[in-house]
Length: 110
Length: 111
Image 1 (cartoon, rainbow over the protein chains, first blue to last red):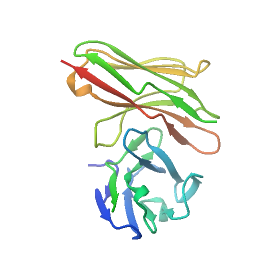
Image 2: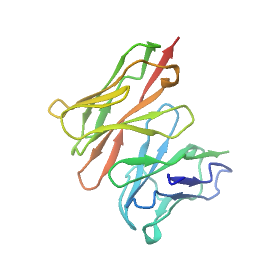
Image 3: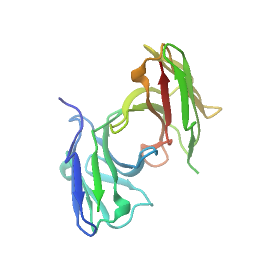
Image 4: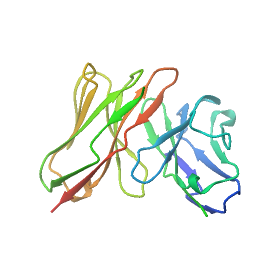
């Protein structure tokens, strides 16, 4: 399977803990995106990489969120000091021309 | 500002045709995309339009009018498995190739 993969698929954590998610894009795709989605809403843009450069980060995103894409391959999204409002599906997508999504990581903060 | 509007819910009957509309106002435009999302799953790509007109892909067609900021997704010969949310997204070129999504249209197909 050469699609976008994400790990873990599910994460339950306690408020105040840090979590890190990983995304492996389709190998020839140079653009990588992170989104957050809550029930009944469309994906909300968080950040975007072209190769290893982080080109844009949502103004809605607090400083507790950080993302990296070392060497322009896989990417990680870290959330520090998680809050209950961070509970959501975190989606990664990659594109060359058309954007394709990974299966998502469902985060539950207790 | 950036705004994408689509109806929240639609209901249709198996075998029928349904049209899901999307209107957008964005600072840049480099394509309009349609995705299907079943409950609890990730969005899957259906179609996209960059130029005005109709793109047909089997039972699915998508239309774009850039001057009107308008698109629609047409689903023919509806099947029960088409019950899902349909997301309209605009690829914005103001600065980066960012995608802006609507809230999605939840389609229920009834027997």
